[in-house]
Length: 491
Image (cartoon, rainbow, N blue to C red):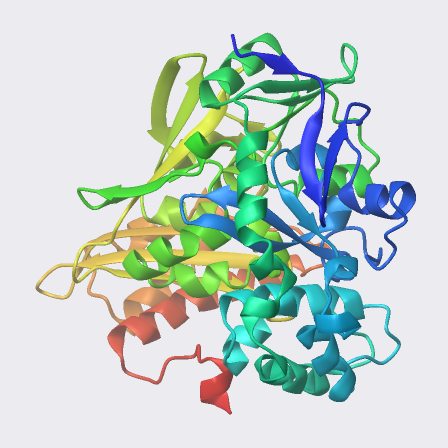
């Protein structure tokens, strides 16, 4: 059993913090504003959409000290052990001057009503540290999760391009403090389990993955919190009790990604940001999809394993992974079992997971040369929106042009992510042609009975799902120009 301590430890701006009285559902935003009077961090939506609450969180990774923009409104205090929290108040220039990010926003009139400005500044700060001379596309990606109701985006874009002209990164406070912060964070990582609070109202941070497995066996009803991009809304929007809560976002053993024999293995704690390079390199269609999941702050926090484990019928990752034939490793104590991902989803809110069992990793086969794979997400707005329907297609053609194999999976069309098996059967063995595809489209009624909700009507979903198959056919045959182009290409 791991040693136990009863406090979480982290750095806030320049000061070490140790807290022994922390509720499992306490958010970073509330603590900053109410306990530390750091009110530059604002509350807007309280669900990780608007970006007014953006701060940076630094953590030690295999690449060293990494700073990422996150949403403080849905980031729980229990996830902060051995991290460096940076708020807008920590930015400073030389001799009392504004920080280059702030000065650029002033000079290019990037602030109008001002409410969202600190969040924009923190997102741009994180981008500037990684990419001092960003492209338009990089700026837009970094700011996907920051919404300005004053429509001041062009001024903010100009400010983002100008930041590096105000000073060198070497003068930046996080650059100056980097070695010292790294040493302080290493000292905080003492290998102990954190347990705070009495009985059921406990906050637990396991020492490692083995310790997590042991804790969950004893507390099978505990809420597992990885990135909190979903669980955070349980608290802020639904006022749900998540006690006791086990925070696993900092477990290195769940944040590993590897590739062997044509299969990518992704630990359940790997975030979208961490998985992006590997997925987009080996399965290019997954890159644009990841870029449309939330904003940068959400992708820095949210995990692929969590997107699977919560079993949402509109989760974006399960359909393409099912279409690729992914498998899932589940662990209980020291015992493991591996199942096809598609069998994990049983019914709405019900997954094939035993008490005390957790998702440990997902194994994704890389499409072979010549196989065709695509995924399409349909939303009301392009960026940072919840899916109305999402279709994923994985096609293998025989030399004679007939369909040797096809896997089609959808989200938003049923109570779980689900394959279109009747449509698949209508295509297999047939010539891959427009007539074949149009005939197969009639089979959708056997696979899905979609619902109407605020995102789309049942009729729209049914029609869109069929048309996505037709789109896949058109794009794979090259008979017409692709429907999907970037905004730069469209311009």
